[in-house]
Image 1 (cartoon, rainbow, N blue to C red):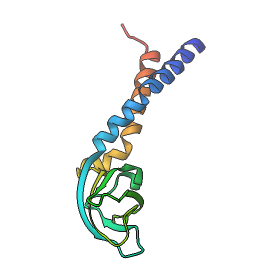
Image 2 (image 1 turned 180 degrees about the vertical axis):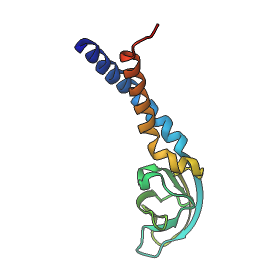
Image 3 (image 1 turned 30 degrees about the vertical axis):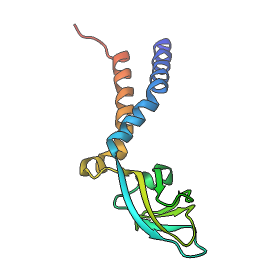
Amino acid sequence: MIGKVFVVILAVFLLLGAFRTSIADGIKGWRTETQVQAASVTTAAAVTSANVTLTADLFQDDTAEVTGITSNVTMDAPVASTYVSATKVLLVGGLTAGADHTLTITYIAESENDVMRAVGPFLGIMVFGGLLVAIFYGAFHKKRG
């Protein structure tokens, strides 16, 4: 019996370790949508950042989910600095002072699908929990017959 438990625990760690990243990426793909948004901002003479209001919620309120920012001003090196989830305001830094900028922001947003918004945060638990239950059931279920 102890050998069977050890084999099951080993199988769980091997399967989850091998497929954890791809499963998590798949779940993120279900929960998110890529958004591309244009914004026009003007920076004052000594200001190198500007606020942009996003049209959708930034995934997990994380500026790392901003996958690209481009500008029509060649001297700009735009970067996402901070995000305020209550107002959907993204602070973009690295702009040239005293200029008009047309920014194109590409970011990963929460899905607009109501079901994914409700179920999405629990998908990881459901998938990994389902795998655990299936492995334990298969290992310890007594066949009748």
